[in-house]
Image (cartoon, rainbow, N blue to C red):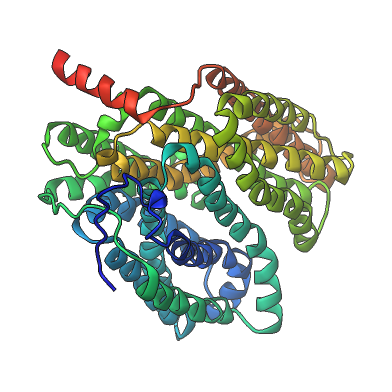
Length: 497
């Protein structure tokens, strides 16, 4: 099969009746599902790995921290790779790297080798989502992207949703190695399927590689993620020298990276994407929603297994309806986005999210479990009506030449936002709990400790409520982005400069 398709009559391949779009989509979605599924499969097995290899909690946490760290390093270069290799070459190469990492992890005789395999997996996973977003932007015209991106949202959210449940069954009945073994045949199938059906949809320009930018990117984004991810591994928290040094070095690296990108004719990550109003709007909204989500995904399990005294399995089942609905609603929200535009979805969704966050800030030690279930469902359904439409609308405003850079920027922000969200909210919870216990006559009593934790959780959700108010304000300023108008605006900007 030919590597490259040159559409002459049709601007987008989805409009060309001679191009089979469905096999291309299936190739990408199959690979994405199992790569993303693997992100959450391992979370429930950390205690098992501690016993298996006789390692401490801070050591085993590198299975998660290291994963985010590698993703933060490789994602910024995805825009460069998308211009150096064909779609087919890059996807098959990415899935091959992921498969190699899975095989190394499954056969690891010691923890260091297991960690190496996990980090190799992270390289593949980190590059996969920018590839998929870029391909779909090139295949489908703006008026059809909402439904397609909703389908991507279904994969992104459904895979992590079933991850913990599936992981618990596999670990209990088969053993932790099968968390990697079960993924391998599906990854191999994805490679074989892509080899047959996937074609190139992007232009290979092979821009000049600026190695200084790569160094700044690695130090900057890697340092920030490492610093924030290390907060919970030290008793000093943000006051730890290692944490502060990593974050400061990371920020300096990012500043130098940004300055250099603005000077280069062919930047690795073209930050001129922020000239486009709706794209910048989408980035801010995306970060707020990511942070608000972590207030629930990180804090709620702590609340349920602590003050509510639920088991880990029960806590997972409580969160499952919300996670599944989030994924299931994504295609529907995408269809509504295509038909009505972003405002109809985002304004009511941000209001519901804000109201739910305020409701969750009133949690107590006696809150009925059904309140938690309903609250989490409302949060996740609201997120499905905000996140993917916002991303799609923002990317729609970019000209084609900036698609790789726009997807790279958003994909880079995800692990960074995740690391910051986890560390900040956990730190707020711990600080509020400690302050509560300091003012108590019985600070070592279990009931008092639980009350202190509830006080910390209330504060976390109130901060998340304040953040969601900002999202409501942003939602009122959103409008449907049209690429053809942006092209004219961009030309006017260039002329004015």
